Length: 349
Image (cartoon, rainbow, N blue to C red):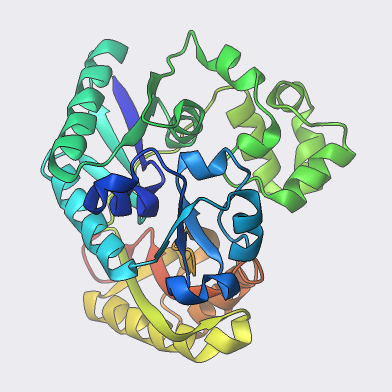
């Protein structure tokens, strides 16, 4: 039986700071975008669960955060430190020798062959203990047959939790959730579903698929399947054999596609160079945006036909990025092609 373990580091930036400042444990902590002496002009980049109890959350102005909790500790974000810890955790997870995918700086998915829920739980406990012992950091793990439901399970068990959802549990688990708990369902999609009278996963599961497709296109069909417990999402092992991608940090945070246009073209040109070097063509294009608070979002689109066109890659990448801008400033972008096939005259992959 194949199961997905979805691992999410709890309050990652704040937990990293508590690991090296143990005197802050148990106290409200804000990780901000400005030095402590200028915190009044800063933005909350992350906070721990003690701070969240006061209503503090990421992207909130620190002036507002301090009105909610005057006694909160404040530390300027150390992004290079968080990236280094993330890389070390990634190396630890890869050491298990399992198919693995990093979803963001603080989230990963692992595919395991297990004899059932109990077997997967034992593996998850080992991972949690290893991360706790080596880094002093808590994480939550959700287990399910598909990556999307595993992530939803993980979200429901935070902080420092562990939960497995099997076939017998999946419908009961899903039906008690709002549609906004499904990964990929943002504010606009939630509003569209609400206009159809759909606010819960239970209501979504009972809606005619044609209605959802009419309102949301192919994503509507995906949502219907997820709502009914049919999750076919799997871990994508990002090896060079199945994808080609490039990422780069922007010199200045961007808020529009126009500001990123030159870098998108540069990354696409580099990707196409590697595609032609490998004599392959691609059928899927994906982009990744890392925001100023170090959260990541990914968008992808499948083409009707295989291609190795730089023009198609650039135009599609810009279209995908248009769906990611405007939420928060973007500090790093990536362009990737996948579903590769050898071009005519070459052996297939």
